[in-house]
Image (cartoon, rainbow, N blue to C red; front, side, top):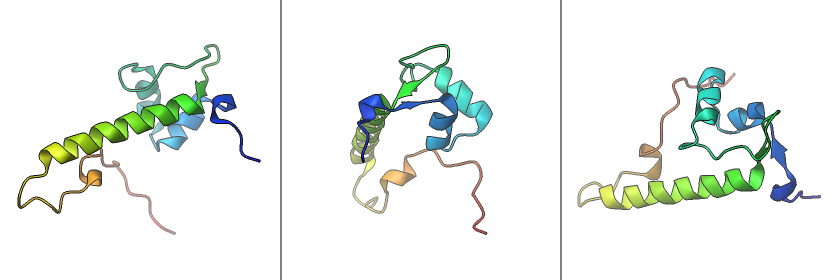
Length: 94
């Protein structure tokens, strides 16, 4: 049974894991209201999944718009992933 994203609440650790942030950077990002939407519940903090999904869609649209602006003749090989922040560490496949 699929749950309605409006009824799914994520803890800070779930949000950090979703975006593959490190613990310190993750908590810094969650406090930055210009970066991540505010939690819908406080004490303890909880984020609604539907609001995070909408935020992700807005960020992807902004990135795609930036990509369209940057693509010029001779730069067709540029992809959307080139504009996204790169992870600090690569996970080893074991």
